[in-house]
Length: 178
Image 1 (cartoon, rainbow, N blue to C red):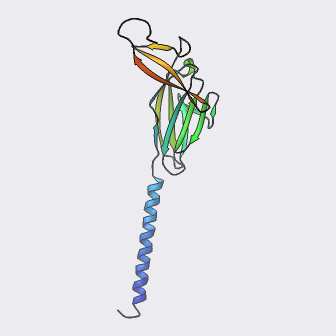
Image 2 (cartoon, rainbow, N blue to C red):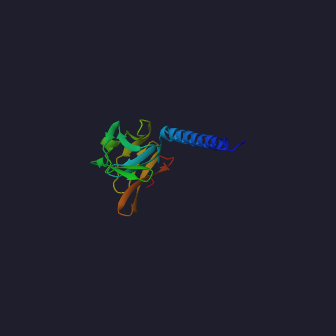
Image 3 (cartoon, rainbow, N blue to C red):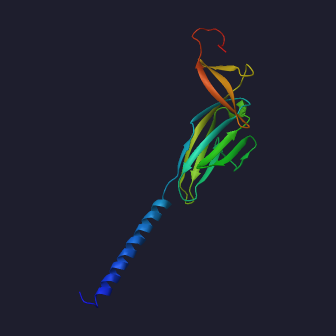
């Protein structure tokens, strides 16, 4: 190879390397832009008692410009919430808290978490909400089917969260084991 052709070959190699780098950047950009969002709710079913509280956590991922929104029975909930409905931004997701629960308004509700990207890709998931009335009063039980729903109150910092557990009803027709 002569001294005159060496710079030409070296320049051609530089151009090829630059073209390969540009192609890699374009491929990575296309992958990022077309990434569809993914959403997951902490549970697909929540049970609560009238005047209690329930929270839904929605985890979402995707790019670019991911936005998380909530719907209750198909009606969008404003950012920050409205009235009994509180929307809280959280790392990698969002929390919807409903407090106090209203058996008339909330029982049978469908809660939807929806994630959308800045380029229009949308994903969503739903959860069903069941709200029972606490007919027996403080820490009582409510019969439904062959089970009993017990309300257990747990203090968590300054927040009161209502959690539920179920226990099999006794096989006899006697009163509640509570």
